[in-house]
Image 1 (cartoon, helix red, strand yellow):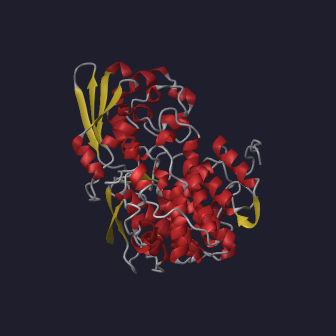
Image 2 (cartoon, rainbow, N blue to C red):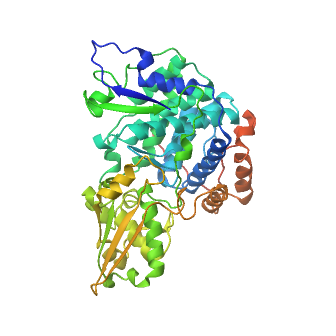
Image 3 (cartoon, rainbow, N blue to C red):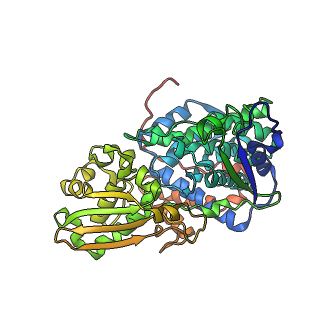
Length: 498
């Protein structure tokens, strides 16, 4: 890896394009380095993972609406849309599939200076591949780049510290991934990256307070913008430059300001793109910082059944990282995080709610655990309101550690019982994490797909998709068109403008 220092440059300073971050990312994307076998295997896992969570969400209102929008933009050859028989224009297909992937907040994650769901790169890369007649090997190369760039940016540049939504890293990474897929020259990829970043910077209000359905749309929109940016760049159109370093650019006005400095490490020429191996998927349909807490709550509920009754509890305090405390904990100051009538999206970002339900139920279910009647159960509401979070310096340090063996997303729980006794326990990483109690391997991804697709897809469709997905690097362009699912009996999309 080569470290690149990135800062704001005044307009009267000289910054050659070759020294701009967008150009250096474009060089990485254009590098024809081979994808390693272990990265290829993980890409297959994540394609299956994305399809699992997308399939489970096909009947949900945001996904139905996005599917309707995509079906209003048919194209030949076009790209496939999960749950539909219509091939749509690639940007709209990527949009609909991106919403389906993100709706349940149940696919992979990477957390560092910024957080991300790098699997969001897959829908735009796959859609463009299907539309342009690329094969499975090209898709693997494009996905490897998308993961590499988004994760490298997430390791280096914090967006949430400035209340900028994390999809601002996704626009450039998806544009880079598409550039790799198509074998575009550095110049073209550079222009696409600038345009993709320029059009995908937005505030974090989409993940604050009463969280709306736009939460699932935001990354899908970034993927759509990346495709449009590539299209414009391929037509010879240019983009704002320098996009990160300019006097009126992203760093100067959206991030650390004119004095800000970042060090972004990117692969050297000829160096394999391996960042996907640093990411991790979810066993549970909840914000990633809640994954370990669900596993700890399940364990405590089994060991101490008395904890399920709020009458036995005086207080439960989760000592955790700064990020968990302020984003999904009581440190956010969001009263909605304790509201039993809150939206699913809001409850997904409430670790007090999640811990209470997992403690009582001994499990977490992507539908049942969020059901309105489950959230409103009186004993759950009583227990839930006794749970708070606090920021702990050591857990914050571990959260930001660059050492994979030390990096942690959990914390320490102290439960004070009504009789004055206390129960203390802790967890560093989720059970499914690579360093967890039960790390996810191929069979877990396949099982997750079968579980989430069961009842949505016919049995033969489940097996057809799994067989095809596991041959991804070998797929011809014609076969790649089958890397989707069709589901009977889905709701009819509502009408809009299109």
